[in-house]
Amino acid sequence: MTVSDDTAFEIPQVYSRHIFACFTQRPPGHPRGSCGALGAQPLWDRLSKKIEAKGLTEVGFTAAGCLGFCSAGPLMVVYPEGVWYRPQTPEDIDEIFESHLVGGKLVERLVMVLTRG
Ligand code: FES
Image (cartoon, rainbow, N blue to C red; front, side):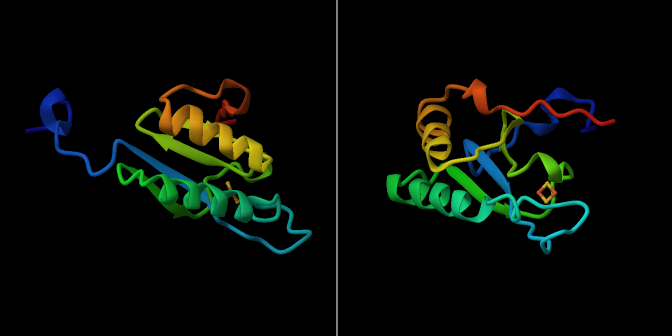
């Protein structure tokens, strides 16, 4: 089996969706900034608590390190869709939770389209 074989990745999945949320916290004034400095922590706390409270065991939530686009934070990615979100408020988190994680519907207004450059 090779990686070019389409069947190579047809393996049982632990989660139906897996979130990676940036927990990096750099000091105030750091030239790169950070998701933590942009208010990520309480947003991720809210999201992880909602997932747990709803009993969404099929949704994984992982505290990630820097995702590489620090000034655009707070950033989180949802797989398998590969959607990058930039929530700013508790209400944004609630909408991502209800629409994407529960309902399977993209929250277009919070999507970050990132490019390497
Ligand atoms: S600190 Fe969050 S993407 Fe770099």
